Length: 139
Image (spheres, rainbow, N blue to C red):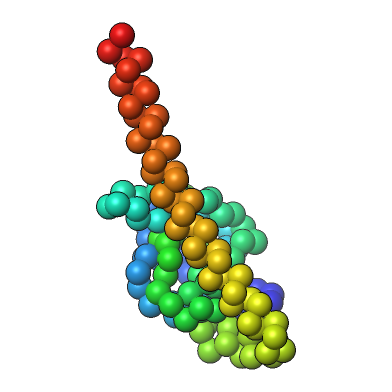
C-alpha cells in the first residue's frame, strides 16, 4: 500500500490523541511525518508500549480482528498521517487467500494477547522500581 492509496491526510499537534483505546476500529493509519506514542491502560495507569515514526502503520489490528482499539496513540510533536479507510483496507485483505487471512488473524490475536501481557509486566516493573527507589531514599 502506498501513500497514493491514502487520500485522506490528517495533521496533529503535540499531545493530540489520534486513537483512543476501547473505541471501535474504523481506520488504519500510516505515519507520514513525526512520531507517536502507543500506550495501553493497565489497572487505570497508562503504560508506554512503543514509539512509532514515519513509515510505521498503526490501527491495523482492530481492523483485522474486527475488535475495539487495543491501545491509544498520541502525537509526539507535529504529526502528519495518511488514513486507510476500513472499506479500502477490507478490499485489500479480501484479496488474500483464505488460509493467509486466517494466519494473519491468528497473528493479530496473539499480538493483542502479548501486548496485554507486556503492559502488565511493564506496570509491575514500574511498581518494583518505585519500591526499590523508596528503600534507597529512606536509608
